[in-house]
Length: 225
Image 1 (tube, rainbow, N blue to C red):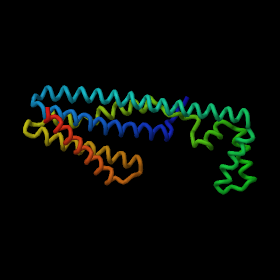
Image 2: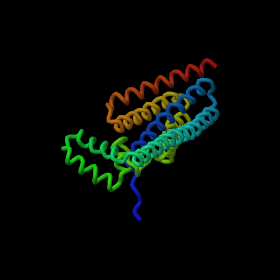
Image 3: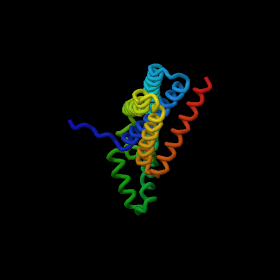
Image 4: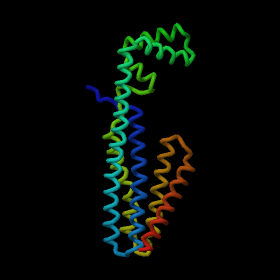
């Protein structure tokens, strides 16, 4: 039996969760690193604080993605149930909706009615859900793939700043972490722009500025205490 391929919506949702997870992993970890490093020079304390935050962020992001996507999936299933009820109580009206859908796209009335007849006779629920909600009945959003993507990407996202702060020579720890953070958020900015068909340069600059602001705020919070 052939393995069912992941739908485009599920792929995009998984990628979205991964990009957001990576970005949050970077910013939360570097925020903690700078706060603690500003308050103490003990390398072990800094490392444990960063590692603890990395793990907490990864599992928190994963749990959040699972809950969010599960809610979306429940909504999709509720919509399908409502559409099944419409078909049971007003099949002809739903077939008219399908015909109107094709007429709005320039198909003649007779041809649109023929298409509606054929599609509704073949799989009425699938057709009605697709026309009304632009949703594929065979590919509900998968909360597990989003959760796993977020868990892995958040973990990987925070590793580079943590490694830089941990292993760079003491006089260069802060500089190395800043560089590592800028590189990391620049990559996530690039990925988010590619995923959303946005402006790459703008996305990278925005992420870098947010990263620098995060480090600045957390460093001076650490200095206060």
